[in-house]
Length: 242
Image (cartoon, rainbow, N blue to C red):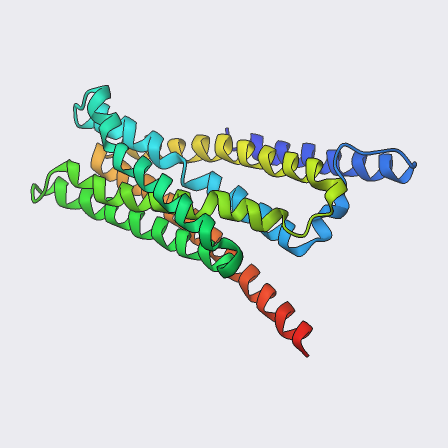
């Protein structure tokens, strides 16, 4: 599986070359690569891509872990995600009210919530493994992840598209959505591969902690990009004020 990643990069490089030469002949390319000269669009698309590589895989790992590793029914596994769904709706509403005022800080706060949720889940699994608490305490960590989804996904989309010219919004939105779908597929393949490779040499609790730790690494990378974009925006504002 890992060998397919370099092959995928070659395909992407070939597509970029084709788009450039196609546009150079005066034709209309599928994607205007000039969009990536817009800082907010490039950084926002990177935030979205990285986020979808990591965080959506949590729900796959949780479903596998609690059903196959802990003996939960499908209904019980679904109930674990119910508070997170409510928190996602609440977080999305609150973030939507303030996104134009606070900008990328909303997304950064959401990513911090995601990291907190992941660390809580890791702690719960560790404490459960030594018999101190029940696995239902995962509800707390997953609730933080729900808040994160509400504060990251929709606000990031709004901020990413903010400076895109009107005539390019269709193409820009399509590229962003496609990157999210590809990132989700690649991320789930990678994270579950890490999970099952660990499970093969350990147990369910260790495999779950390692899988979540891998997602923490991706979330930290996403946070780094979001902070970098916030700094870029701050410098731009300061420059305009002079």
